[in-house]
Image 1 (cartoon, rainbow, N blue to C red):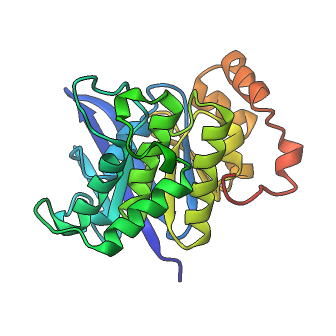
Image 2 (image 1 turned 90 degrees about the horizontal axis):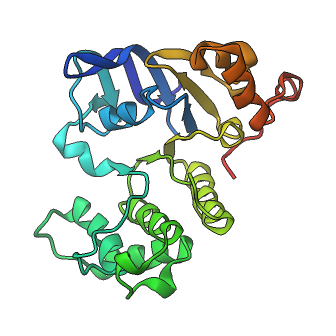
Amino acid sequence: MTTHAVSGSAVTVAYGGVPALLDCDLAVSAGTTTALVGPNGSGKSTLLSAIAGLVPLARGTLTVLGRPAGTPEFAARVAYVLQSTPANETLPVTVREVVTMARFARRGLFGRLTSHDRHIVANALERLDVADLADRHLRELSGGQRQRVLVAQGLAQGADLLLLDEPVTGLDLASRDDILTVVDEIRSSGGTVIVATHDLGDAERADHVMLLARTVIAAGPPGDVITTDNLRRAYRGRHVADQVAGLAHVDEHVHAHGPRHGIH
């Protein structure tokens, strides 16, 4: 029997009365990588925020790790890494301190860190190749370096479910490789990853894809979801959809031979 890390029925989220997600049904199996794809404004970030329990549902049900989304005692089991944003120039926080903050999600704000916690932090820094930056201030880093630090923070939390919002958009090749390698490692070790991405090439390598346009256009294996017809429905027009498919080198004949597993 398949265990679902996330499941939802008629999930609807609205901002100011305007739906950002409408009647979405979803099921994410534990131990897999799921890619959320779709045009700008399609609801990818909103769905991640709902799964993280950060936005309320206007309608529907959403279960995360066996409990309703946002259940306080399960918060530490979900790590949410936002897309990289400019660092606060007035905040003198080091890379090590940023990653260490993740352990307080497990210990509580006033919990005492142990040598085990420090080992986990050091391991996360090494895996994202930012250990040599540990004593530098976050504001001193490049965008790619900052994003690797934020992913290291998510990794250090030791969560069962990792949510990533466009983690490699606009990054250099080295940062992309570091982040996507860790995503693949998490999946291989039994963790569950949900990643929002604009890159259909990355999405093709996931176990499962959800194509969104404020509702679920299609969901399933990459070869079943990333098709010209589905892209036209999501991107609302043949010209735009064909451009998206062409840039990503989407070829239904290639998909017919089966997707590659894991995001690399």
